[in-house]
Amino acid sequence: MDLQEVSVKDLWQDVYSAGNLHYCFNCSTCISGCPASHGDPPLLVRNLARKLILGLEEELLDDDTPWACVSCSRCEEMCPMNVMPFEMILFIRQWQCRNDETRVPTAIVEIYKRGYTQAVGVNTELRESLGLPRLNTITNNPEQLELFRAMLMKTRIVSENDYMFGG
Amino acid sequence: MQLCFFPGCNTPAIRPDVERAIRASMPVLGIELVDADNYVCCPAFGSFPSADEEAWMATSGWNLSIAEEKGCDFVVQCGSCYSSLCMGREHLLHDAEKLTRVNELLEPAGRQVTGKSRVRHVSEVLFKEIGPEKIAAHRKKSLKGLHGVVQYPCHTLFPSEVVGFEESPRAPQGLRRLVEALGAAVDGYSRELQCCGGAGGFMKSTPEQAVAFAKAKFDAILAETKADFIAVSCITCLMHMERVQNTLNEQIGEERYRIPVFDYNQLLALCLGFDPKQVSAICSVPRDSVISRMTDVNPNT
Image (cartoon, rainbow over all chains, first blue to last red):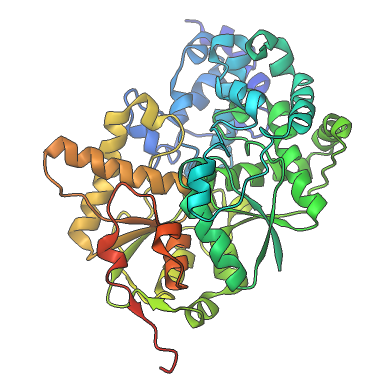
């Protein structure tokens, strides 16, 4: 692999413009304390930053480890160079979704359909037994749900993958 | 004081007794909760924030517009909801272009977002707004004689600039002080600040490693503390720290890991005298060992 050739593409700026990845000096603070660094394969945040800086597009597209992140944001707090690694992980996931529709999380379809990833507000008997009121969910408010869906349909991820949201 | 209650999804759907505990305790302590009608997913980090920034911001904006319309701040229990709403607001407040675009998207629904409503975690409201002294003064029951450990939700600590309310995110005090206010002794231990590991894809993609990661934490609790219970302040921590103990017991074929896990709001509601059958009804690690040892607080002492 010719690193000079791939690095001129400045992939990192396409993917992630919020922080400056060139400040990263591979110190690995982002890995120590990261729960998912105990995974198999491990999430090695520093390595993701390297792949981005070096422009290793194919390796990064195939990398599943950004999805193991637990979102605890320790790396975001501890990074001494303010690279904002947690935001970087989210932007890598977004970039993977833009380039590979099979990456698009099905959770967004649930949210489009009923407002939530869980079936909220349908456990009425249990809620009543606990003395809880009926929840005014958007699932039970067709007019608001329609407005919410119409809003999402104007965003790129939903309009470009509209086949996922039918029915 | 009035706050708009953002229930999230796991709490009302799977652990509504935690919701009941919050709705019971808050008015006793002077907080009036108003409902977030037609709220939607926070959005969860694994959903729109992982797929598309514009849809992420629009969904955040939809939720924030509800609190703004009510003219108050949000109060949130779930760590992920809290962090996602804080991050969404932070992006919108610091990027005029994003804010303009989100308001274009919200406009047909008659909604608007400015960022004027803040997002507050329930433990921050309890610790800073109400305070341990006032909580202690309202107790009808006490946890005196019991030992607990605390599990700080990562999402209320990091990144401290966006979500934090502790003086030091590396030495947080809030949850410890709140549990002490109920009469219990809080034992420190070496892995107190280790994440539970329950959120995101870690547990889904490599459950074996995620359970082993949590085991180190439970082994430290057993070896270093006299914990009768674990107090958490996030719905994911609550569900995960129960589930992992049951998984570990299945693996070793004995009941070694059986420390009851409570959301703090449940301990609080129990100490305020509310019915365990309503505010502490659902668990997979039995809690009787704690509830049966609670004592009455004598108002004359």
